[in-house]
Amino acid sequence: MLQGDHRADVVVVGGGIAGCSTALHLAKRGYRVVLLEAHAVGYGASGRSGGQTIFGLAAGQATLEAQVGRDDARRLFDMSIDALDLTQSLIEEYAIDCDYRANHLHLAVKPRHLTELASSVHELQDYGYRSARLVTRDELAAHVRSDRYLGGLLDSRSGHLHPLKYTQGVARAAETVGATLFENSAVLRYQEGPELTVHTAAGRVRCAHLVLCGNAYIGAVAPSLARRILGVGTYIIATEPLGEERARSLLPSDAAVADLNWILDYFRCSADHRLLFGGGVSYSAVQPPRLVESMRRRMLRVFPALSGVRVAYAWGGFLDITLSRAPDFGRLAPNVFYLQGFSGHGMSLTGLAGRLVADAVAGTAERFDVFARIPHRDFPGGRLFRRPSLMLAMLYFRLRDLL
Image 1 (cartoon, one colour):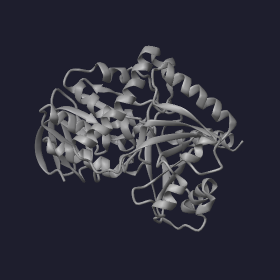
Image 2 (cartoon, one colour; image 1 turned 60 degrees about the horizontal axis):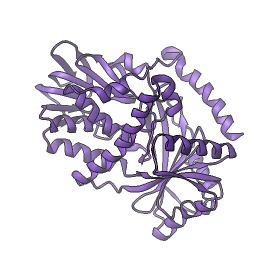
Image 3 (tube, helix red, strand yellow; image 1 turned 180 degrees about the horizontal axis):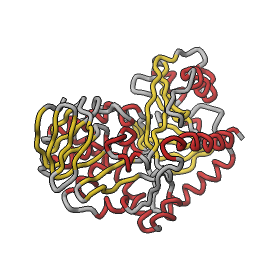
Image 4 (cartoon, helix red, strand yellow; image 1 turned 90 degrees about the vertical axis):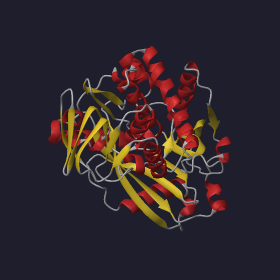
């Protein structure tokens, strides 16, 4: 816990992957860095996610091209691939034990999804990306043993890992190169100026630069940022250990999987051979009733053979989405930077975001500014009505999935 008065070159707020990566890359450059986390490292989305490292951005390339033009959209895509490479290089350089496995599948549930996948492959080839290929229904048996799917897109460069182990590993790496991390140190406010002062309940830090990586938990620290994102609940269950043979009978290639429904299912096997199955969303900020039962029904729709298997764990958390699902990076002042809005594609992109903002603090902002050029708007409806209005919109997409 932060206590008393401190000085630093840079204060980073938030102990997820974005914040820890920012601290790591700044400290490697020789900056004195203090990271403040309200709870424990990995408490938020970084430590609770499905652990899938995926190419691209959640908004999709067509949306990005409309927003920033084809050249910048191409740069954004290329940086999403850099993010995958950075994830693996950090794992190797700092010996992060996080159960990384290669291969990811996007799966078609409906015939129109096959059309979308074919279009995706064409777009990826147009962007020069050659690691993804279409997989027919017959070929799927080598990856997913389920009758639910019609085909898929297999990407060998994407993959999956243990998200909390990875987040904690990046935090340890930051400490080894000189960053100072304080957990249980919620930031209450900061004072702007050439010298910033960041306040917690028991201490304060004076600094030249501030980087806000609070995402769905940024709250009153930066109200203008909080209006541009919405915390969405997502949930995961874990079965009892299945044993290696049974786990491989479900996912023979040990790939991570996500379907193409708007309210999607995603799943993978853990290192100890449990099936981790995620899906469902809550836009109401309230955990759905009978969560385990509803998630179990979704799992059995994919793998009916697991009907006798016990669900050992269930958890959830909030990820932050933007209105367009594009990430939101920028500055609130010349010396106040922020990273947020990863919209479900943050497992690898957050690591790169930390390196980009570290470069920007050091005066090399070209790549950071490509992201900063993406336009963003507040969620409509204000504080009282933005969630109800979004819940109505999601009802439409839920019905679309069912039909």
